[in-house]
Image (cartoon, rainbow, N blue to C red; front, side, top):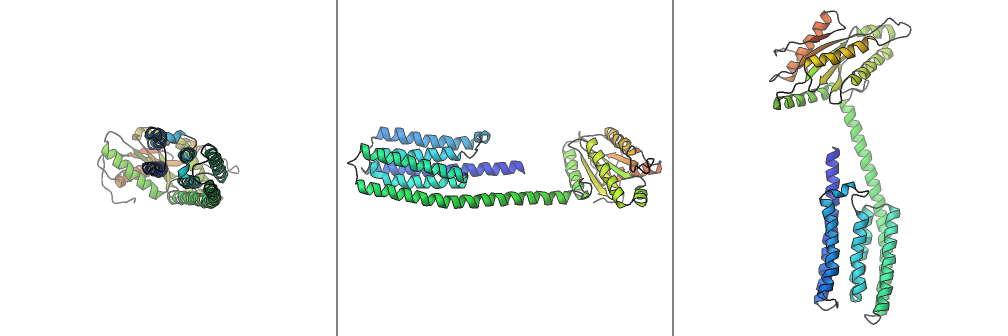
Length: 374
């Protein structure tokens, strides 16, 4: 799930960068068109040297995200570099082509809105203040170097309109940023709620172990994996707490619940990460040991049995112990999961008939039984 979310976020970053790249190319085309109509006195070599390099730089940002090398950065979206680089092109046009100041102001406004979708409010305002400051410096430089180009009053009016529009864009962007943060927060809360619901659906409420339904799903997955790779084997182990009703009769429900929890802790510590421990019902549990033959599974079961036998139930009755019986079977090629479980269950009954508090192994030969565990 996490990998899928990372892929979705990366795809969204790339999509935003491509949108910015398209805007960059459109800006270059408009500037070139103005030059072709004689509105800008820029030589061809100088034009492509400046704006070609600018477009190539933006393409490099897109390539950085496309290759995934951005994921190691503090800001994988590269929002600030994209904003600053996009603003650079509009400022270059403002410096070199005072005749097209309206196009420059429009481009800077679009750039000023871009950060609202990724930056914090403080950084967003800071970036827009930087854009306003750079635009002011470029405008003053423009008027000093080319005082006779264009109407100074019209240029000043356009500059003033730009500042007012940028202020409005900043306020609107802050509103959008607030909505985005709220949406992200609610999305995270929803994801957490879904995770909790999923855990509730697959966990036993009392012990925190996996429940029966989840274990059956995992068993089917293990079977499919085993069928694809016949050389690998997995074992299942039924566990029953011996004479468990005596705990409830002598000490009550609270103490019997505590015993179930303590067994869950012992079993969890005895298995590996790739194994599964679940409560199958009442005082019965199931261990699913991946890539484990039944002889090795018996060693795990024996370790749990000994620790359980040493468990102190009550200080008032120190001699009282709750033992556990184990029935183990290894999945055989071609057999159904229910058959594997049935053989483990028969082994568990054999352990009970043999005096309980012991580990019994099932026969390897698969056979049909009427009992179902689904």
